[in-house]
Image 1 (tube, rainbow, N blue to C red):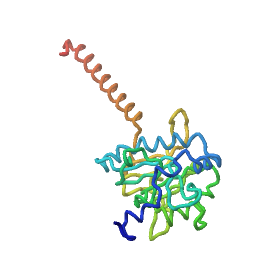
Image 2 (image 1 turned 90 degrees about the horizontal axis):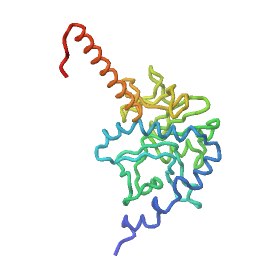
Image 3 (image 1 turned 90 degrees about the vertical axis):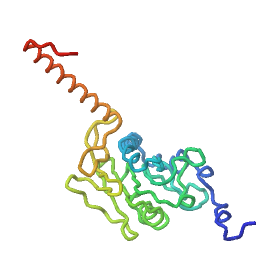
Image 4 (image 1 turned 135 degrees about the vertical axis):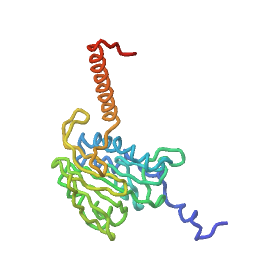
Length: 254
């Protein structure tokens, strides 16, 4: 028999990620209807692709979660999706990537308790929704007072600008950029900022990561291209050396 104070019975009435609307549910659809644009999906992929090697170093056991337009449930409501926020991109460390062998359908705070380290919103409108401090309703208030990401970033797509807040003493403080115009995310050993360049056939100011020395974190495709260029330079160097030796009457060994 279990007692009224048994933690297992206390959790019984609360739904888990399999019992709540998932990322393609009503709350995300409404968000999209309110002003999503084509850039936001590739932007999420760009962030995830380039930072994955960092997470693999930080979490060799693979215990971390990246959410892309995934609901974070912070309270029980009717309908359930009113009790969720869906950042465009967020990261939580030291949690399993799968639950009960299933892909996560949402992130449920009352089941896992660990707050995201960073949550990012990609703004298509004027940013008022992402800066709304209305208690129990405004996104800014919910992130600051309930979900508690240590870092909260607002990327305004149309303005090509980004601002990052850090949770200090229970309140978000706007961070200043460093000499490179980036925001250091010290726990991850990286910086966040804007990069002008081409990605997925679009020349834009994209939100990207750098290391703390100012080196851009590359995507898998960029790393492959960098290696291809390195190999091509090495081949050309070898060809020049071979030509020089032959001009001296020396046949290089194969």
